[in-house]
Length: 289
Image (tube, rainbow, N blue to C red):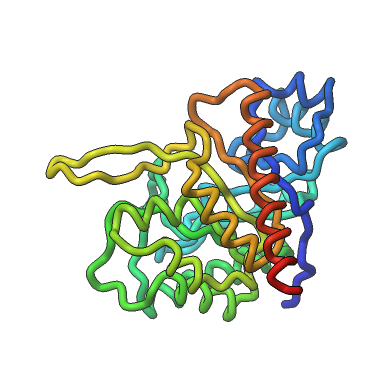
């Protein structure tokens, strides 16, 4: 199946939080788009849908799933897919994305996004699940690179190659979470610049930026937690500029899901991302001359 490439503005957007509804609805600030988690809107009605319907009249939407469990070897939940399909029809989002992770086991669901081994077997069922999802929803989905804290000893395919193969086999796009790159690079000791240089940027349809939290394990080793509760680190913004320099401007989400700030603080984060992207774009133009 061939899918049309969905489009959001190539500027910064933010995740919608109910505490910001009145500002968004009454002041209509100039923000590129809003992103919502699909699972928060699986009910048929009520205040969540009334708010989102009001905002959809003014802003493009990106729909981000966290519960499809693309990386699980068990079959996809068909009821969940149908609920996603109903949401797609109701709100017509510019993009739909999910995680390269699993969150289901036998008959239960886990409140986490867990990593998976990068093997040919895993590659096979992940591609099957993405093809099923795209067939049911009728849209090209984006798959997000994970943030990880442990690695599988029997992984045999580098993550960037694994993602490139998925995109090549299924026709899906990729969501590049730059903060996830820094988190995983710090936790596993690899070079985030080398990772990004190997990333198949031609398939990227959206970028995520977020804050992370410094922690120390029981052995005294420093690591990062993908916490989504603070401003984007300068080091992540520098990596983001490297991506924009190579790939051009792309829809970019500021993720801030915990300790949610006031609207002015969140809006400033989006504006900061736009400034970094504009600077990278100007630098790319100078190098092209």
